Length: 248
Image 1: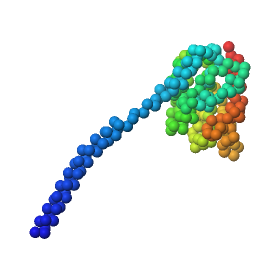
Image 2: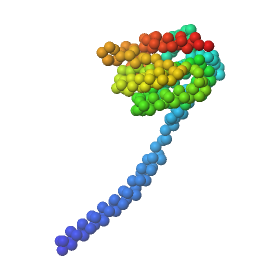
Image 3: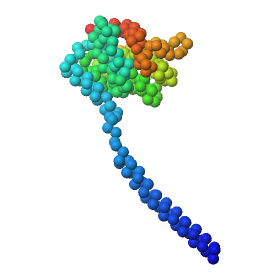
Image 4: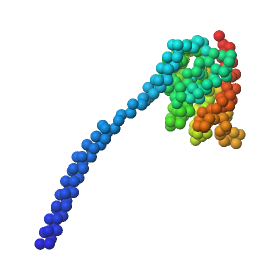
Protein backbone atom coordinates (compact mmCIF):
# COMPACT_ATOMS: atom_id res chain seq x y z
CA UNK A 1 0.00 0.00 0.00
CA UNK A 2 2.73 2.37 0.98
CA UNK A 3 4.65 1.52 -2.22
CA UNK A 4 1.60 2.34 -4.34
CA UNK A 5 1.18 5.70 -2.65
CA UNK A 6 4.90 6.45 -3.13
CA UNK A 7 4.72 5.48 -6.82
CA UNK A 8 1.64 7.63 -7.33
CA UNK A 9 3.35 10.62 -5.73
CA UNK A 10 6.44 10.11 -7.89
CA UNK A 11 4.39 9.94 -11.09
CA UNK A 12 2.52 13.08 -10.09
CA UNK A 13 5.81 14.91 -9.46
CA UNK A 14 7.21 13.84 -12.81
CA UNK A 15 4.07 14.97 -14.65
CA UNK A 16 4.20 18.36 -12.94
CA UNK A 17 7.86 18.77 -13.85
CA UNK A 18 7.20 17.94 -17.48
CA UNK A 19 4.27 20.36 -17.66
CA UNK A 20 6.36 23.15 -16.08
CA UNK A 21 9.21 22.55 -18.55
CA UNK A 22 6.80 22.72 -21.46
CA UNK A 23 5.33 25.98 -20.18
CA UNK A 24 8.80 27.54 -19.77
CA UNK A 25 9.85 26.42 -23.24
CA UNK A 26 6.79 28.05 -24.74
CA UNK A 27 6.90 31.26 -22.73
CA UNK A 28 10.64 32.02 -22.75
CA UNK A 29 10.93 32.72 -26.49
CA UNK A 30 7.89 34.95 -26.26
CA UNK A 31 9.50 36.89 -23.44
CA UNK A 32 12.73 37.25 -25.43
CA UNK A 33 10.82 38.43 -28.49
CA UNK A 34 8.85 40.90 -26.40
CA UNK A 35 12.04 42.28 -24.90
CA UNK A 36 13.65 42.56 -28.31
CA UNK A 37 10.67 44.36 -29.81
CA UNK A 38 10.10 46.61 -26.81
CA UNK A 39 13.75 47.73 -26.59
CA UNK A 40 14.11 51.13 -28.27
CA UNK A 41 16.10 50.97 -31.49
CA UNK A 42 19.26 53.07 -31.52
CA UNK A 43 19.00 56.17 -33.67
CA UNK A 44 22.72 56.79 -33.59
CA UNK A 45 24.19 56.68 -37.11
CA UNK A 46 26.75 54.00 -37.83
CA UNK A 47 29.39 53.45 -40.47
CA UNK A 48 30.17 56.38 -42.73
CA UNK A 49 26.79 57.92 -41.87
CA UNK A 50 28.07 58.91 -38.43
CA UNK A 51 30.20 61.63 -40.07
CA UNK A 52 27.45 63.08 -42.25
CA UNK A 53 26.77 65.98 -39.89
CA UNK A 54 30.40 67.12 -39.91
CA UNK A 55 30.85 66.65 -43.65
CA UNK A 56 27.62 68.53 -44.37
CA UNK A 57 28.83 71.34 -42.09
CA UNK A 58 31.96 71.69 -44.24
CA UNK A 59 29.82 71.90 -47.35
CA UNK A 60 27.53 74.52 -45.80
CA UNK A 61 30.57 76.53 -44.74
CA UNK A 62 31.98 76.34 -48.27
CA UNK A 63 28.79 77.85 -49.70
CA UNK A 64 29.06 80.95 -47.55
CA UNK A 65 32.84 81.22 -47.39
CA UNK A 66 34.56 78.96 -49.92
CA UNK A 67 38.29 78.47 -49.32
CA UNK A 68 40.62 79.34 -52.18
CA UNK A 69 41.71 76.66 -54.60
CA UNK A 70 45.29 75.43 -54.85
CA UNK A 71 45.91 75.45 -51.12
CA UNK A 72 47.38 72.81 -48.84
CA UNK A 73 44.66 70.52 -47.56
CA UNK A 74 44.98 68.81 -44.19
CA UNK A 75 42.62 65.98 -43.31
CA UNK A 76 42.49 63.13 -40.82
CA UNK A 77 41.24 62.60 -37.31
CA UNK A 78 40.96 64.82 -34.24
CA UNK A 79 44.63 65.80 -34.08
CA UNK A 80 43.94 67.73 -37.30
CA UNK A 81 40.40 68.85 -36.45
CA UNK A 82 41.49 70.33 -33.12
CA UNK A 83 44.54 72.10 -34.56
CA UNK A 84 43.05 75.57 -34.29
CA UNK A 85 46.39 77.27 -34.86
CA UNK A 86 47.06 75.30 -38.06
CA UNK A 87 46.80 78.26 -40.49
CA UNK A 88 48.93 80.41 -38.20
CA UNK A 89 51.56 77.69 -38.02
CA UNK A 90 52.17 78.13 -41.76
CA UNK A 91 51.34 81.79 -42.44
CA UNK A 92 52.90 81.83 -45.90
CA UNK A 93 50.70 79.01 -47.18
CA UNK A 94 46.98 78.71 -47.84
CA UNK A 95 45.72 76.06 -45.42
CA UNK A 96 42.42 74.18 -45.63
CA UNK A 97 41.58 72.09 -42.54
CA UNK A 98 39.16 69.25 -43.20
CA UNK A 99 39.89 67.00 -40.25
CA UNK A 100 36.96 65.27 -38.53
CA UNK A 101 37.47 63.84 -35.08
CA UNK A 102 37.41 60.12 -34.44
CA UNK A 103 37.74 59.29 -38.11
CA UNK A 104 39.82 56.58 -39.72
CA UNK A 105 41.83 56.41 -42.94
CA UNK A 106 38.92 54.63 -44.62
CA UNK A 107 36.64 57.52 -43.65
CA UNK A 108 38.96 60.03 -45.32
CA UNK A 109 38.97 57.88 -48.45
CA UNK A 110 35.20 57.59 -48.50
CA UNK A 111 34.64 61.34 -48.19
CA UNK A 112 37.45 62.44 -50.52
CA UNK A 113 34.89 63.49 -53.15
CA UNK A 114 33.45 65.97 -50.67
CA UNK A 115 36.37 67.13 -48.51
CA UNK A 116 39.39 66.90 -50.81
CA UNK A 117 38.65 67.09 -54.52
CA UNK A 118 36.40 70.20 -54.48
CA UNK A 119 39.32 72.35 -53.27
CA UNK A 120 41.76 71.28 -55.99
CA UNK A 121 44.60 71.33 -53.47
CA UNK A 122 48.26 71.70 -54.28
CA UNK A 123 49.06 68.95 -51.75
CA UNK A 124 47.16 66.67 -49.38
CA UNK A 125 48.37 66.08 -45.83
CA UNK A 126 46.87 63.11 -43.95
CA UNK A 127 47.21 62.31 -40.27
CA UNK A 128 45.13 59.28 -39.38
CA UNK A 129 45.48 55.64 -38.42
CA UNK A 130 45.59 55.84 -34.64
CA UNK A 131 41.84 55.41 -34.24
CA UNK A 132 41.94 52.47 -36.62
CA UNK A 133 44.57 50.69 -34.53
CA UNK A 134 42.88 51.53 -31.23
CA UNK A 135 39.63 50.05 -32.57
CA UNK A 136 41.42 46.73 -33.09
CA UNK A 137 42.24 46.87 -36.79
CA UNK A 138 45.42 44.93 -37.64
CA UNK A 139 48.30 47.18 -38.65
CA UNK A 140 48.51 45.51 -42.05
CA UNK A 141 44.82 46.27 -42.67
CA UNK A 142 45.34 49.93 -41.75
CA UNK A 143 48.30 50.09 -44.11
CA UNK A 144 46.13 48.69 -46.93
CA UNK A 145 43.59 51.40 -46.12
CA UNK A 146 46.31 54.01 -46.58
CA UNK A 147 47.21 52.58 -49.98
CA UNK A 148 43.52 52.74 -50.87
CA UNK A 149 43.53 56.40 -49.84
CA UNK A 150 46.47 57.07 -52.11
CA UNK A 151 44.72 55.29 -54.99
CA UNK A 152 41.57 57.34 -54.42
CA UNK A 153 43.44 60.64 -54.49
CA UNK A 154 45.51 59.54 -57.48
CA UNK A 155 42.32 58.69 -59.41
CA UNK A 156 41.53 62.40 -59.77
CA UNK A 157 44.76 64.14 -58.83
CA UNK A 158 47.61 62.05 -60.25
CA UNK A 159 50.33 64.62 -59.70
CA UNK A 160 49.43 66.12 -56.34
CA UNK A 161 51.84 65.25 -53.50
CA UNK A 162 50.33 63.16 -50.72
CA UNK A 163 51.97 63.62 -47.33
CA UNK A 164 51.50 61.17 -44.47
CA UNK A 165 52.12 62.77 -41.07
CA UNK A 166 53.32 59.90 -38.89
CA UNK A 167 51.52 58.86 -35.76
CA UNK A 168 52.81 59.75 -32.29
CA UNK A 169 51.99 57.55 -29.29
CA UNK A 170 49.69 59.22 -26.76
CA UNK A 171 49.84 58.54 -23.01
CA UNK A 172 46.20 57.40 -22.90
CA UNK A 173 46.89 54.88 -25.68
CA UNK A 174 50.39 53.92 -24.70
CA UNK A 175 49.62 50.23 -25.22
CA UNK A 176 49.19 50.96 -28.95
CA UNK A 177 52.68 52.42 -29.38
CA UNK A 178 54.34 49.40 -31.03
CA UNK A 179 51.52 49.04 -33.54
CA UNK A 180 51.60 52.77 -34.24
CA UNK A 181 55.33 52.58 -34.86
CA UNK A 182 54.89 49.61 -37.18
CA UNK A 183 52.29 51.51 -39.22
CA UNK A 184 54.69 54.43 -39.53
CA UNK A 185 57.41 52.07 -40.76
CA UNK A 186 55.18 50.50 -43.38
CA UNK A 187 54.06 53.87 -44.70
CA UNK A 188 57.60 55.22 -44.71
CA UNK A 189 58.85 52.27 -46.75
CA UNK A 190 55.91 52.56 -49.14
CA UNK A 191 56.69 56.27 -49.54
CA UNK A 192 60.27 55.51 -50.56
CA UNK A 193 59.00 53.12 -53.23
CA UNK A 194 56.19 55.30 -54.59
CA UNK A 195 56.70 58.58 -56.50
CA UNK A 196 54.74 61.58 -55.31
CA UNK A 197 54.45 60.49 -51.69
CA UNK A 198 56.07 62.07 -48.66
CA UNK A 199 56.40 60.91 -45.07
CA UNK A 200 56.94 63.04 -41.95
CA UNK A 201 58.25 61.29 -38.83
CA UNK A 202 56.65 62.40 -35.57
CA UNK A 203 56.77 59.23 -33.45
CA UNK A 204 59.69 60.41 -31.35
CA UNK A 205 58.11 63.77 -30.54
CA UNK A 206 56.05 62.35 -27.69
CA UNK A 207 58.59 59.86 -26.33
CA UNK A 208 61.36 60.67 -23.85
CA UNK A 209 64.90 59.32 -24.34
CA UNK A 210 64.16 56.63 -21.74
CA UNK A 211 61.01 55.52 -23.58
CA UNK A 212 58.27 57.10 -21.47
CA UNK A 213 55.47 59.38 -22.75
CA UNK A 214 55.90 63.15 -22.75
CA UNK A 215 52.65 63.94 -20.99
CA UNK A 216 53.41 67.67 -20.93
CA UNK A 217 52.65 67.79 -24.67
CA UNK A 218 49.00 66.77 -24.25
CA UNK A 219 45.79 68.27 -22.94
CA UNK A 220 43.98 66.73 -19.96
CA UNK A 221 42.66 63.75 -21.90
CA UNK A 222 46.26 62.64 -22.56
CA UNK A 223 45.25 61.90 -26.13
CA UNK A 224 45.25 65.18 -28.04
CA UNK A 225 48.20 67.57 -28.37
CA UNK A 226 48.28 70.90 -26.56
CA UNK A 227 49.74 74.03 -28.11
CA UNK A 228 53.30 72.97 -27.30
CA UNK A 229 52.65 69.60 -28.90
CA UNK A 230 51.30 71.26 -32.03
CA UNK A 231 54.27 73.60 -32.10
CA UNK A 232 56.68 70.67 -32.23
CA UNK A 233 54.58 68.97 -34.89
CA UNK A 234 54.56 72.13 -36.99
CA UNK A 235 58.35 72.25 -36.85
CA UNK A 236 58.51 68.78 -38.39
CA UNK A 237 55.91 69.58 -41.03
CA UNK A 238 57.18 73.03 -42.04
CA UNK A 239 59.99 71.92 -44.40
CA UNK A 240 57.52 69.85 -46.42
CA UNK A 241 54.94 72.66 -46.41
CA UNK A 242 57.57 75.07 -47.72
CA UNK A 243 58.62 72.58 -50.38
CA UNK A 244 55.18 71.83 -51.79
CA UNK A 245 53.96 75.42 -51.43
CA UNK A 246 56.66 76.60 -53.80
CA UNK A 247 55.36 74.41 -56.61
CA UNK A 248 53.12 76.10 -59.17
